[in-house]
Image (cartoon, rainbow, N blue to C red; front, top):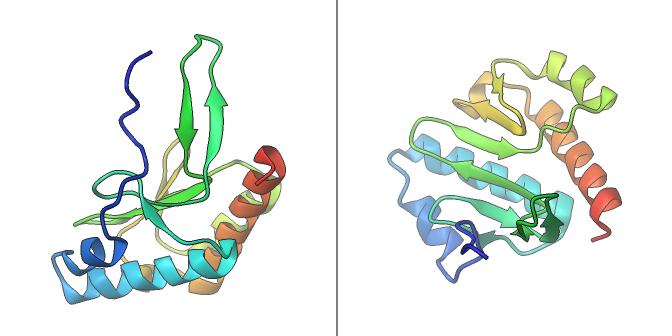
Length: 139
């Protein structure tokens, strides 16, 4: 079995956030961190040099590849924040119409800066994603 690239490590979430390139990026990362702490009631861990995750679950693909991943995660990067929360529920789709300026990928929600979005709507999106993940993975 190949080594999994994204695994929890002992690096400091606080130190990573402090290392972000601007005061605004640090403030946005702390805001996101606090939202996810409030929603999950779990301690965050770095799962890679830039991925902050909460909880964990086991996955196994039909190919036989298996491993662990964070239940919910975000990555405060130099140019944007990436939330690993897209799950295509009807509730989430409706909330995204009210969010503000963002982009999505298969499972990612990309936000350049939190000032571009409605934080209350983001919180609802994160809550919905966490609920779905908890229900699905039994954490």
